[in-house]
Image 1 (cartoon, rainbow, N blue to C red):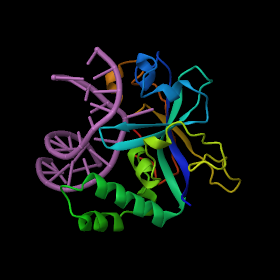
Image 2: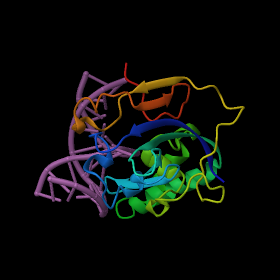
Image 3: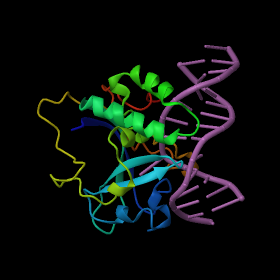
Length: 191
DNA sequence: AGTTGGATGGTCT
DNA sequence: GACCATCCAACTG
């Protein structure tokens, strides 16, 4: 069982949000964004990384929260193995597995899922999980409430990453939400 | 510490 | 055919 704490997310809206996958209305890729909330929307970026969203709007309205970073709590060895499997699969042609293994061996635990593509790799999330109910206790991936003993969150916000193409105001809205106390955040905050 | 370019394939114009 | 909600190695300072 792999368990982690979500420490960084980004909010994405419907067709009005020019940075959102929903910006052109419903398509084959984004249709789960338009469905009921609490469901996984999994997409592939740059031809190789699968990323996890939680659908967050009411049924019929497109909205989702991209999970950008997770702080590992349990199942770290499984996460490492999954990271290796993912990297090896992707680099099957050009690299030998030994280099990837050595690189991963020196990677700090806190960095195992410190990025949206890395969350997908560490938790073995792929597009087959698109549409699953994250609130179903029997689902392969689940969303749980925060635990009483969780560290206190230090809330920070910043513009979303990688959406400059959307133009203002969408590229500048502070819709990237981070726990500033976590060592697992994907990138340092601006400023 | 910051910048650049390659890998790679689906999606939309 | 251009673009992309990324990651990493290899550079520069």
